Length: 392
Image (tube, rainbow, N blue to C red):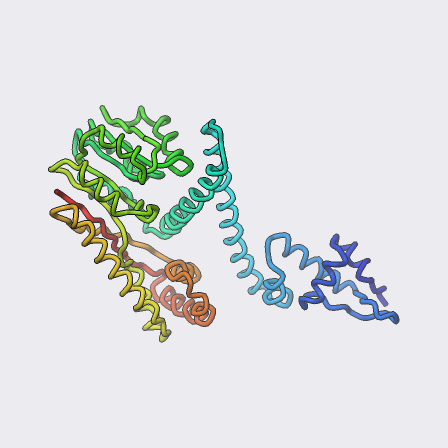
């Protein structure tokens, strides 16, 4: 008969503390095989194997609750799915860490006397850039090949030769990066953004790729806060602009209307101001129809559509206060999904704060999406986004 181990002995063999062994017992993960005459816990080789499994799974990031609920007693299929989910979570964690590292490096590279306001700036820039970049990365992951969203936006701007362009909140500047050699000759781009974000990276990109620009194209990047007068004093020095771009920036401002009003004052009489803001995502209508077909009650979708519609209408009316004519430009983008899990994640991302709904219905939702994928091999869906073009 195999010799039983005390809690101290099994802890030593597994490389953990006795306190950890007691905790795993309390959590229902590792029960004693037997008890000694003195009522001490005893463990056998099978218990050691379970403990080693717990230690290994903790090392790759699983919580004790996840180990207890899904893994210790789970079959190979359950473990495989759990590992795939954990991989996605760890990749997301790595991405967040890399973003923080990048933001800190950019701040330190400025070579200035730093204070705690700079630390707060790091947190703000990381938060904003992570969210924007995460959503863009997820979109790229499922965009139908051959469709570049920023090429479509660029073409909708109808840039001609010798344009003078003001780009408000340029950020990573995919509008320019993805169309670098297509910028018309003689174009002057005056881009503005704050330090400590993706605009720092764009500044490096401009330096490294200036020679590839078409003839007489120039890009002047200025680091200023668009909600402070110093930025607008510099903007106004160039008099007026034939194109003004304010894409994906209003959500980062405390007073978006102030930026729109100021932009209207530096626009050429024959130019136009391009902006996007609150809208009703096509995904809401897609998920509304999907839930109805799946027989799942999701009243928050109609509520969201109603609220977003009101926000969009108010936004359009606000822009009309400063421009005599406002055209709505609609651009489409096709997405494809081949995994039901990815469709579920997209829906969760669209409806943050609906944890109870998803906890109750996610299996049924996945089953519905899986059935649609099995019918056609994938789910194809075309979304539409709107940009407003205002003229004086």
